[in-house]
Amino acid sequence: MEKRIPLIIDTDPGVDDAFCLLLANSSDRVEIRAITAVAGNVSLHYTLENARRLAGMMGLTETRVAAGAEKPLIVPQETAEMAHGKNGMGGLELPETDKEVDPLPAWDVIYEECKKAGGEMQVAAVGPLTNIAIALLKYPELKGLIKHLTIMGGAQTAGNHSPYGEFNIWADPHAAEIVFQAGIPMTMIDLDACHMSYLTDEEYDAFVGMRNRYSECFFDFMAKRDGERRKRMAGTPYAGKYGPCDAVTIAALLDEDLFTYECLPVSVETHGPCMGRTVVDYRNRAGKTPNCRVVKSADRQKFVDLFYKMAEVYAK
Ligand code: RIB
Image 1 (cartoon, rainbow, N blue to C red):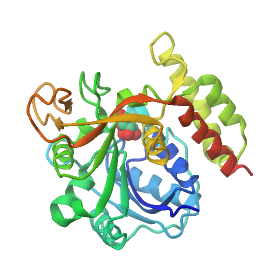
Image 2 (cartoon, rainbow, N blue to C red; image 1 turned 60 degrees about the horizontal axis):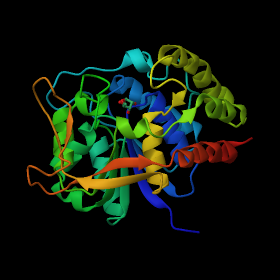
Image 3 (cartoon, rainbow, N blue to C red; image 1 turned 60 degrees about the vertical axis):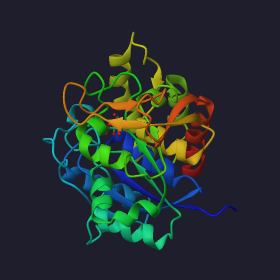
Image 4 (cartoon, rainbow, N blue to C red; image 1 turned 30 degrees about the vertical axis):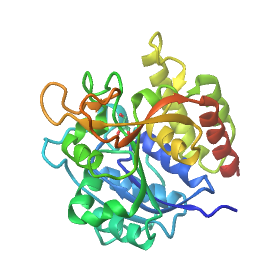
């Protein structure tokens, strides 16, 4: 069997973050060395508690869970309770656990684990990039220790938190710009990518029907909650499509052929009316070095297959 990829997931659980963690854990391609929590969807209090409980629920005894940044580097904090509920899980109470939080902060855990992995570590960052930026600022040599960084963030076309701002980038644009310009090999799974890779309502219902050890404590609740989304999306271009962004991001890491990419120069607007915009220079008019893989097309069935495989792996 192929050697598992050592993986750190930096996250702000977050409903779709939870799908991301469950999908990652269902794969024999990765070994989750650390889950680092950052404030984003909700406050760090809840993102950390959700990360701890999800790690406990999945029995990740060897995985370090660490607390990261409580707020963005510079801009005032804005969270996304309207999308994830006050506790970040849409009101679902995850099972209690005795899983402990690491005594070190996220940035130190990221550095330690990347050093231990000897340059083989991959990082999936599915929340604001504050922890990653702080880790890079504190440990400049870290950029040579991350084999590949896959982020959920950005938008090639329309944003979801402002006209051009996708939430993760918009929530901490300065951290995002530090990360994009750090020179780490990276992939941006942006909103446009998430709209190419989704489950249809029928596929999602079929997935929920595949009973597994997390049906009662997680998937059934999220399926009921999805009813509200379906009503909201009726009549829009997103109707009948469920692409939890963070799960799409980890799917891209698990299956290299889910998307096709082009490596392009990408930068982040850190102020003004387009703050939080990821600026993709398709024709390299600024003459900058391409620094990020940007999604061009998707094989959607590969995303569906990963969800069905997850149900199979977790089947009772
Ligand atoms: O814009 C989508 C992103 O914002 C996802 O990571 C979701 O969890 C929210 O944080």
